[in-house]
Length: 121
Image (cartoon, rainbow, N blue to C red; front, top):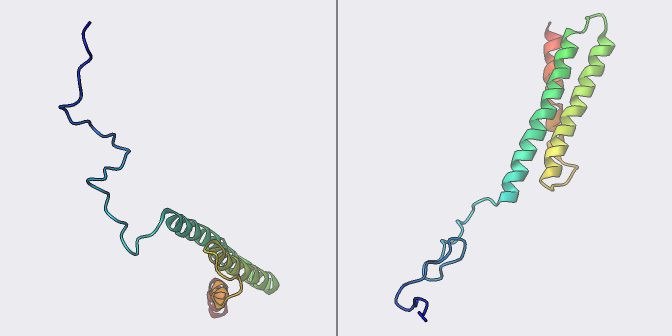
């Protein structure tokens, strides 16, 4: 009977998914973002910009309402401001920050800009 060939003289190839302890992978870069952090930033940017677009759309709708309907214009601007606050709150919540913050005042910017433009026309 013949014997199977011996591996004694040849080096075994290591599978790619295993760690080579003779050549370890480089350590992680200090300050690099983890996958979870990147996912949070992407999600918060998408959510905040989408909700702010809704707020800006309400401001544009208020601009095109008949001038005699001041109550409707003010109502749309208030709703736009609330949507802006919701956008900022959503961004803070995704990052796990406190819900009540001075940053929420930033949500009123689209409504205030729309009110300024309406007073000028």
